[in-house]
Image (cartoon, rainbow, N blue to C red; front, side):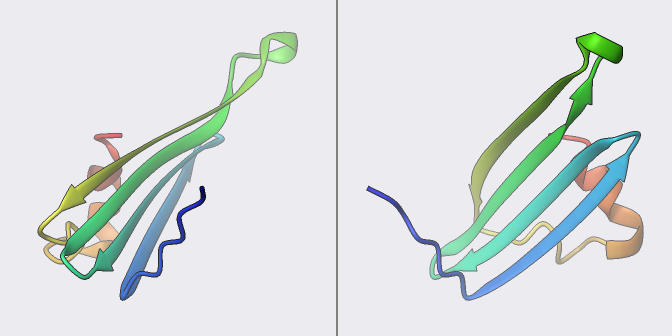
Length: 81
């Protein structure tokens, strides 16, 4: 079974530092917000270089982006991934 998410509103912020991409998505749904935090990139060097991808999803009653200055606050939002 697959699940399709049709949010009322959706916000995304992505930051890439040293080849690692950190992304935070917030979707407003009927009874709150779904927050998805993710990281992806490569670890190691040369032949030991491997791709990684990880993500976590949360439910919240409030939008974490509402009280943040979007141009300055994105790094602090992604630090907790």
